[in-house]
Image (tube, rainbow, N blue to C red; front, side, top):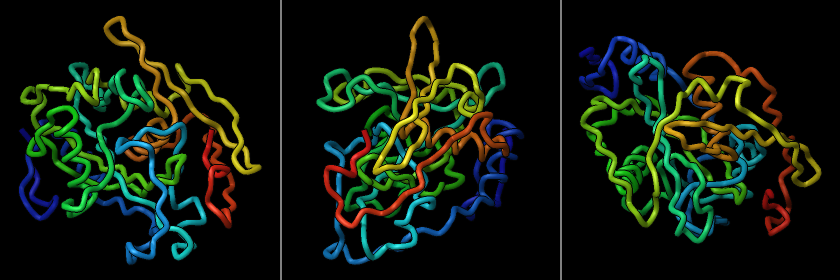
Length: 269
């Protein structure tokens, strides 16, 4: 068992020297600056239909005009947990969920554990770990948080903050899906999200600007999973950061022009 005393101001245990080195690497990451928090009473908020974080598309907020024009728009916050661990073959893997088929929106879709911030959450890390505990029974004490990525914007302009953590005891995690929200808990190799394999892309348009929507297929135990939209975008970014190389394909985000009025026409389809 490797350990470090340089992360989060205390001693954290990691299952291997490789994961310790990764934690140290990621702990130095500094996301691009984005808009600061402001008075909630003066914010314009646009929300997803549910508290879960699933969307057809998601882009890094630093690439949008919202970061440069925070006074014009203030989206609601949410967070997702990118929980990494070493698989039996030594590869880095990420925990994912398949949403319940009984959900009224985005039923059966693949997502990262996560959801909207609640009033009692002190930060994005607490939001992500609380939601992961509620959704799949992942005890926050089993996850060493190592960094937070820049926010992403969902198709409804919900601000989603990816939080990267490392599972410190793989055997201790026994998934217990919340049947109301999650049908399955599974994991996939993180590196697949920067490889040009089992991937398709579709050109779409939003407000006159073209972008590529990436879709990944993953098979495990005779089951096929489709990972796309916001979840794919977040994992492309996370994999690029972890492996310190860009994806082997063109991402092509749109060149945003911030709308004067945020209405139904701004929703990405």
